[in-house]
Image (cartoon, rainbow, N blue to C red; front, side, top):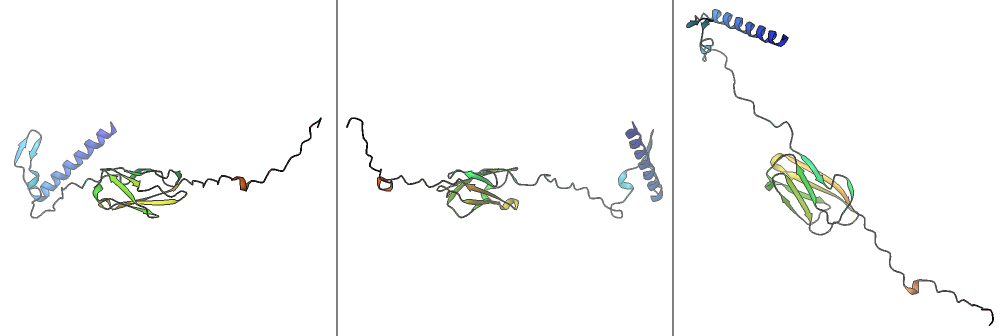
Length: 179
């Protein structure tokens, strides 16, 4: 209820200001109704002399800026499989034809993209126990993102022991009762 009273009071004050402005400019009503005089708004402030109002709507902007919404493998993850693809998913669509990908250390890879994701597949297995940085750039959005991950550290298998590497068994002498 208090809001309604404030709205009515605001409208009443606006009406008073409008009437005072009309009288100050010397305009007379062009017609009357049961609610009072009717004056066209355009006659209150002539366009050539009065201030102009810019009624161009403000551009609509997306409150959420463009960015990566998910990445696989996750940033700073370890133990990643040597043939694992890297996938970047973005929070909005973009011109995927302008996207680029760079690895450090440099590797051969292929990547595919659609309107909101990029998938990178290594041309050969990643090196074991290696930290990689992959940066995806989307120039149409003036954006780049770097993901860092470390591949699984595959141990070198121990060489099998050969008979010459093993100590020779010591000869045993056995005595049996009755011999």
